[in-house]
Image 1: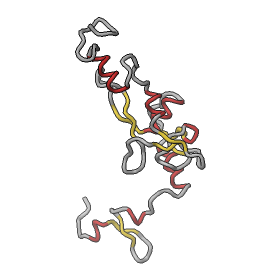
Image 2: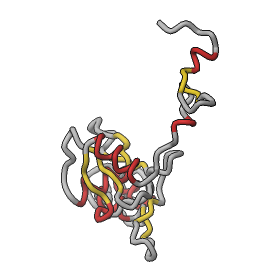
Image 3: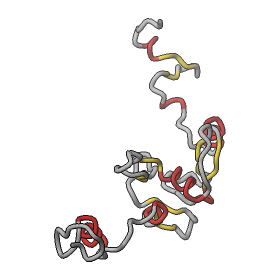
Image 4: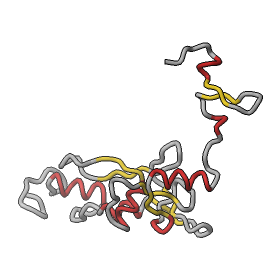
Length: 161
């Protein structure tokens, strides 16, 4: 029998559940960390900017990823860390809104640096702050010498539908 419950002991006098907790946490009675506790361990405060910089998994664009839910009940998924931060500190995010960065740091998860906005408001904020890519980087268009734009389809002699 397990030292802590009525289950059959499998190793070190512990059942499978308590042995795994002992093996992972060093304490057979320690409960799993809450979502907020796991989140708090995955960022580092930056004293100069006030940002909480994500130290966990990141996407190539710099945005953090945070795992939520459980395999057991089928709710496991990954969400962007700044969205998880908003949800954990401020509450649920309405479906029509995005979580936007006031500090323009993709890896920042400080809820004081985040705000809710529509896709349009987020885009206008990006353009106003000069963070958008200039049109010359758009692969579908090419700038003519007279300053006008022409589609690449014209240049490649591809007929437009």
